[in-house]
Image (cartoon, rainbow, N blue to C red; front, side):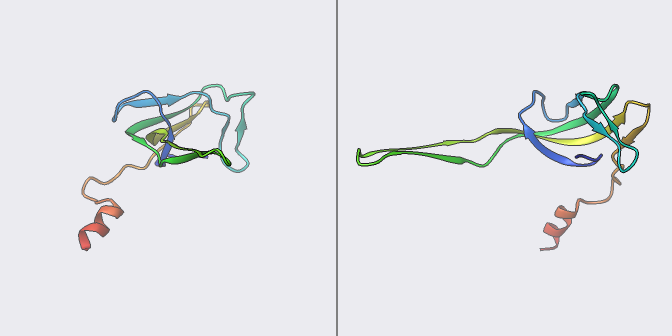
Length: 117
């Protein structure tokens, strides 16, 4: 479930920071009683998002051991992730809900807390 203005980490998608992506395979659109369920996808519905950055996830350790054989191996894996900002959701019926516009002079809440310290 996403709403305009959400910031998500998803599996790596092609695109540089600042580029726009469109997701056309939308399974459900709406809220409450005004939901539209696709079969399998909602026709005309799309979610547009902006790529913020390409990052790597936390390391997951993989351990292999064979008992009594002095065999131990340790490996790791870091998943490539894309951080996206959901800009707009179109429901397929011509209705669009967009992220609220940010005021140019307003600082982000995290940045304001850091500057006070």
